Amino acid sequence: MKHAHRLLHLALCLLLLASCNWRGDRYERLLAEAEEMNRNDSLFTSDSMGLVLVRHYDHWWHTRNHRLRAYYMLGCAYRDMGEAPAAIHYYNIATEQADTLDEDCDFATLFRVYGQMAMVYGRQNMPQEKREALKRYGHYAWLAHDTLSHIIAYEQMTDVCYQLDDVPGVFAYTDTAYTLYQRYGYPQ
Image (cartoon, rainbow, N blue to C red; front, top):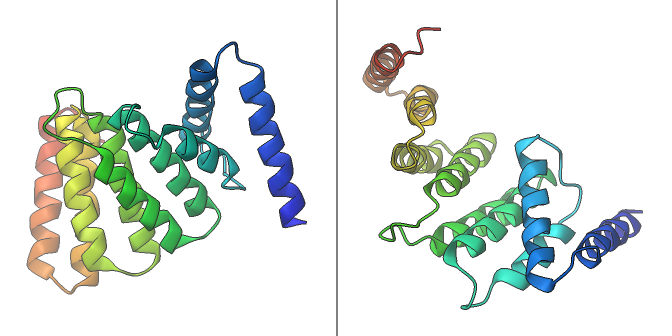
C-alpha cells in the first residue's frame, strides 16, 4: 500500500512537471508547490517530490539557494513521515548549501530550516541540539529581518533551559523575550 501511494505521488509530480513549458520552469514550479504545501501545513506523505527536486537542483550550475530550498523540502517530507534522523540529515545538507557571506543568501529559508531542526530535536528530547538550532534560528531570522521569529527563538529557549534545569536561563530568556515583544510592538 505504501509503495503504491509513493508511486502515485511520484506520478503526480511527473505530471506536474510535464505540464510546464520548459524544463527549468517545471522544476521551479514544483519547488514553489512544495514550499506552498509546507507553508500551508499540508503533510508530505512521501519523499517523492523532495527526491525529484534534489536530483534536479543538486548540481553546481544551480544556485546555492535552489539547493538549500530543495534539501529543505526533502527534510520536511521526512519530518512529516516521522523519519527524524533522515529529516535532520537533509536539514543539515540544506544548511551546508547556504553561503551566509553572499548578499543573495536566502536567510529566510535558512532560519526556517533551523526552526524545523529545533522542532525535530525537541520531539526527540534532545535539548542541547535544540538549543544550538534555536540559536541559529534566531540569528538568521534577525538577518532575514523577521523580528517576530527572532523573538520567538528567545521564547522557545526558555523550554530548553527548563529541560536542562537551568533556572537562571529560564528567567533570563523569559525577560529578554518579554522585553523584545514590548519593544517591537507585540504586547499580546
